[in-house]
Image 1 (tube, rainbow, N blue to C red):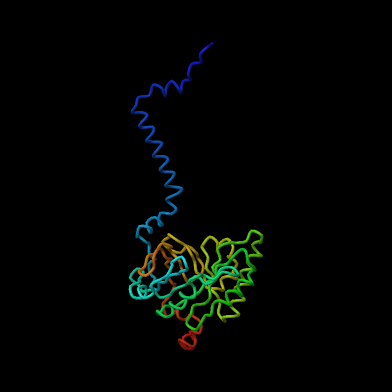
Image 2: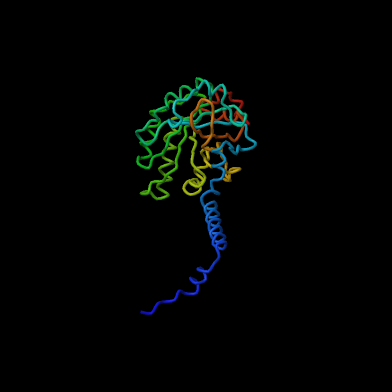
Length: 277
């Protein structure tokens, strides 16, 4: 039987010195690390820094707040009110999850909603929009659950997913239906919360610009959205006394006076002259 001779490349590799193998292996490892960093680490670099206590606080904003749900567990409101600060600024507002879909109430909502006002925070409540329930049923469920009072922020619609069985136009109409029903009940335009890319993809119709926008855009130096906005959720790994685990940090795009002007019944609380500008 004729024995096949190894090809040229195989023979060359067989005669390489040991140091060449080490250099080649190191080069391959370096290339792997580079591509891993480029595709998996670099896009989330701000998050890794935040996880280790180096949150990139937005510059030029003085009104800070948080948003919470049952994920934060039982909050020590006394400790939060006395020692809680964000970038050396007091916490001015607290948004909290109230409802989801047409049947779910956040298990900590009622206690959080009561305590936030008791400890002097401007409070707000949000509804997490579900792709499994009709918009009208979700709006009516939120209304039946959340009793907003004078001094509270407008109701919030948190919308992050689009039903697969709806066209873009149908989805727009569903979101608008929720907003209109809730606005009619509370007498104030709801706030729309969503992340930057979702807003640009599904809620870019100018009709949505009539509603205050709360943008979720993490680990960037500044808001990239070019339209008007009121709130910016800039990190989900904040730490505060009185809250175990991470909590979302937000800023308000304006003064504390402006924030209070947004609230329900602000004309009675602040006075009609505040709206004569």
